[in-house]
Amino acid sequence: MPANLENSAVATGLEKDKRIRVSQPLTRGPSAFIPEKEVVQANTVDERTNFLVEEYSTSGRLDNITQVMSLHTQYLESFLRSQFYMLRMDGPLPLPHRHYIAIMAAARHQCSYLINMHVDEFLKTGGIAEWLNGLQYVPQRLKNLNEINKLLAHRPWLITKEHIQKLVKTGENNWSLPELVHAVVLLAHYHALASFVFGSGINPERDPEISNGFRLIPVNNFCVCDLANDNNIENASLTGSNFGIVDSLSELEALMERMKRLQEEREDEEASQEEMTTRFEKEKKESLFVVSGDTFHSFPHSDFEDDMIITSDVSRYIEDPGFGYEDFARRGEEHLPTFRAQDYTWENHGFSLVNRLYSDIGHLLDEKFRMVYNLTYNTMATHEDVDTTMLRRALFNYVHCMFGIRYDDYDYGEVNQLLERSLKVYIKTVTCYPERTTKRMYDSYWRQFKHSEKVHVNLLLMEARMQAELLYALRAITRHLT
Image 1 (cartoon, rainbow, N blue to C red):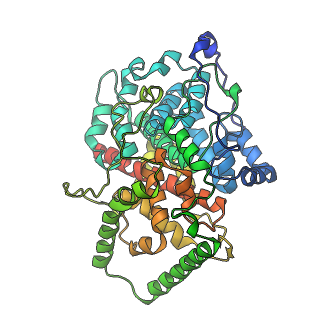
Image 2: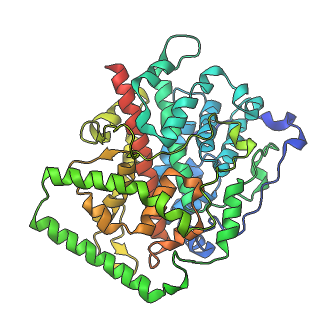
């Protein structure tokens, strides 16, 4: 069992008035989207989950994220092991810095759930309480991570070797390459985890004991009004009540049929390289219209056209709060070169670089990526013995497509065939603007599928997003080195 780290009683001197009461969630259980009994059943059955929590949980208890992830115990093990390694085991960065970087990453998406969790951990591992007042109180070298945090979270394709050089240049505030790789892995991990938190409707923790008397952030405004607006409309679908169970069953049958047809077409003829390129470009351009076209009309409670209100509690940890995701394939802008996955792959390039500079993390991340990509129970809703490889690949590659990453050997026509409009809206929101995710969006796709299957979708989106961020950052580091 990993050595328990000594908890330092840093928080004792903090004034009582620093506490801010956290709003209570509107629904019970770990998730506002998933009925409590479904998650609880999974946890009571599984002793393995309890063992994993004892072994690898940094908070030492079964938090809401872990409870929802425990619907997939195999994956949970990979996740907890890699997260524990990043936060607790030997590595280039001091423990408090790791938690502060997690806070900075979560703040890019106003994820108060993760911020609160790491404020506690930061103090427990000996962090300086004053840093929690905001970025102006932290050392310059941590502040220097702002730019790469911002780009990784929202537009990772803009990261260049110049950004890396700026951080590792000589001087008292410079970063060594191993430290920078550790920081980048943490940033990518927590951006992606924020996607999972919002995508799965993770509720705030109720346990008042976890705070060190320094509860900084109430649940973010947007999320609460969102749950209030959305939550009472149990299973409200995109188009109101005209979607009965019959329609969702036929929706499932139609998806099964399309998978079968694509499989047959694939065996019959292979598209030319030129045709594959055209299909990628088409999908990339179409992704432009997914949120902007549909969402304002489909989800009246999500008024994205207004600037999001960011509470001062969150904004203290970031600069340039208005900077967000912009479509890779932006209309009328200078054409950005597509990241051809074959030129810089995780397997051949990213893995070895990250492992060389921050030993063993490469193996843990690789296991986690493979685990989620290959995870299957060979079921789809009520159907058994189904090969879901095609569907999993479409989900993973669609995320990478939105980040400008293209696989030469993949037919992007499949994305259009397999991912319906409401699912694409959900994927794009969870991946690019997670703080805007609503229960209505979650309920609107795959109405016949089990909640555990939708959690699997969120795990795929989270890992695809993390891998995309890492590929851009590691490619920039490689260019800096060559």
